[in-house]
Length: 145
Image 1 (cartoon, helix red, strand yellow):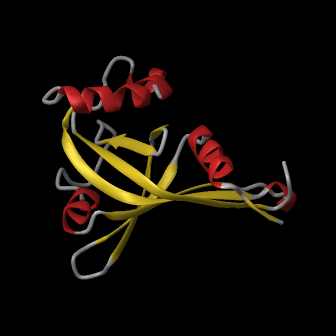
Image 2 (cartoon, helix red, strand yellow):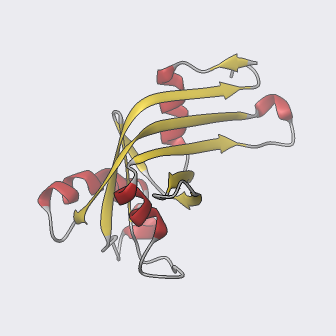
């Protein structure tokens, strides 16, 4: 078993297609949802897209407004437990305007559009963009890979 270096944790995290975003509301209640994302340096970006949602008032966005501290977790499960690993990004999130309303958001969204070219090719995310400034990358793997 081995801890991952910060660089190794970032590299593994960036390669994954989905992560789990943990936020906390003003009363301290946790909220966990899967997100698609892109990594550029120590910034993780995701956006509100057209995938079906239960509500247009997303808890994750309200929680970030109340408490910007977030955690993202990407992992790899395998029945062969020697292949297990996880990578975690701790940071501070901010909700930005949609890419159609802000050139800064459009620039941040570019790596996300590239990573999910097939999914976003005809219909890029139209909702707010979230940028997470990662302050700590950590991770673990069952064995050196």
